[in-house]
Length: 144
Image (cartoon, rainbow, N blue to C red; front, side):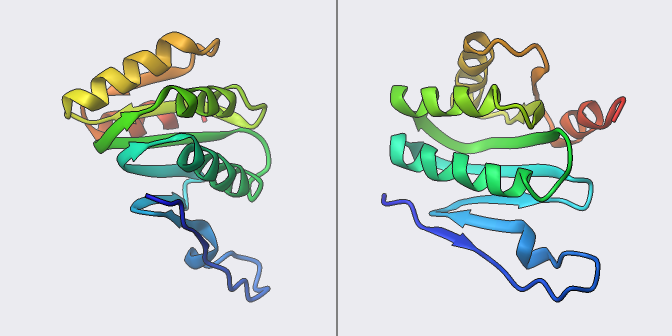
């Protein structure tokens, strides 16, 4: 699958960004910056290096909307295999200066493997895996 980046624009200058400014779709993957200033990512299917680069660029665009560090919530329920080159790209993103906490959630067995691999390869300590979205969000919002 070829990555397709769609950045929805339309800022009206009224002091608040509209939702379409805060959402990016890449293939079937959806990324959006919530009102809580947490980046919500829904990964769907296999991720190769090109897709990972497109996702990284999208996350960085969303991060730049917010001042300071930004937390990320990733839904892995529909995620597929992440190829080795893609994992390297995600490691770079996890270590980015604007990256705050990373919370992953999902019951799919592939999701658990992806999250455990990712947590073991990064230097950051503020990465956790949860069974539910609610648990993950509660952790992200602690001490915010």
